[in-house]
Amino acid sequence: MDVIALRTYPTQGEPGVDHESCEVLTSGLVGDRRKRAPVSIAGAEDAHLRVNIVLSAPTREVEQLVGEVVTIGEVVIVLESAGSRCPGVYGVIGQPGRIRIGDRMLRAPEA
Image (cartoon, rainbow, N blue to C red):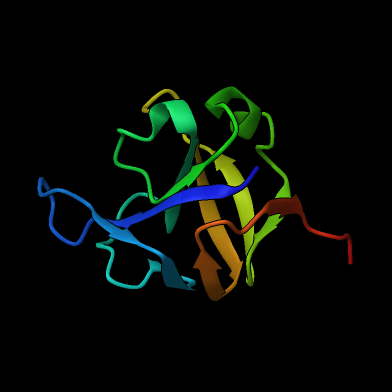
């Protein structure tokens, strides 16, 4: 699963801003407004939704990773269910860093 889009949504109701790379803090992507979770992640078929990270895999494959710890670029993310609100998953940032278009999402090695 590779990152195919990175977006921030600085102003509620306004279009998202596309990025080639983005710094990620424990609060989420730099420039993004506060939401229910630091980041939202979905698959390619849901790229039209207001998610921060779009992956090359189908959303159902992304949702199967709920509870896993993953890395994308320099960032460690704990994946959580988005519930029935929207497709995809929410992510809590375990280690800040930078994410770039083309970075692969991998299961984090166990410590």
